[in-house]
Length: 101
Image (cartoon, rainbow, N blue to C red; front, side, top):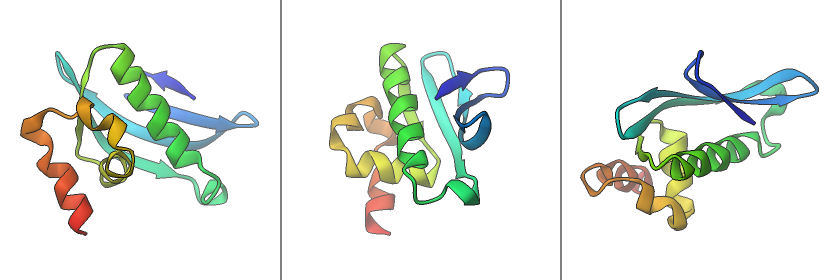
């Protein structure tokens, strides 16, 4: 798993092949996750969760707030409340919407 800032994404690779990505936009003090995608041949193998955890851990290490516009990232944070502190209170409604469906 690695950040590919030139592509504005975190990427997971398996045997040198792209397995999935989490796309983002950087703001001065925040990272806005816009889309997460796992290639079909890697679905169901935990790739999306690995991307989410690595990207969120990196955001925490960099002192960035997280704005989860991506449904997958928002739902993942909702299932892992120890990451909710990364989401500013003004953006926590994004998590609530994902919990309700």
